[in-house]
Image (cartoon, rainbow, N blue to C red; front, side, top):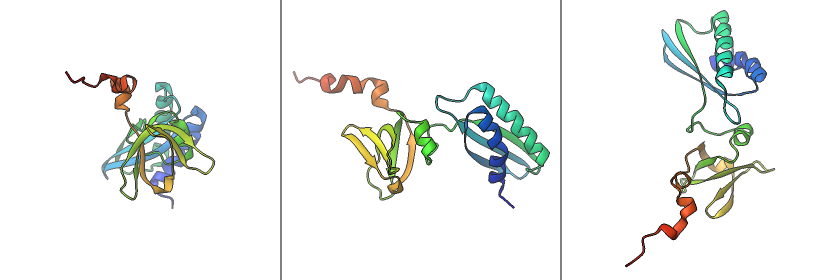
Length: 167
């Protein structure tokens, strides 16, 4: 028999396809008498409240009909948040032009930059301060979205001209 995560995905797939959103995963937590079933979905540009409501209602009805989860459970439909790892071609396409933090298996220094998407070989292209870098995904331990603090603070625009001048 398939595991519970696989069954939840199979139940959710037709609904998310109809809504034009992407199923990203499920996180199960809590004890056996009170489970939290968190289904994570997203779409380029975000997911509207109506789509979340329809997915919640449809999936809840199916979970109850299947009697898949013993005891009480709480179904939560949510977006992935910044710390959700990007792992699929769809993930990199969905978050193209967003700021990423890339950490490496071999412990070398993490880098940050704008996601330019995947090239034909499946390598990640990122714009960093040093130019465009090609990242071999098999060498990474984690790729997540993050906040470009320089851009938010305006440092990227001001550059070094704001450095304190010696008197």
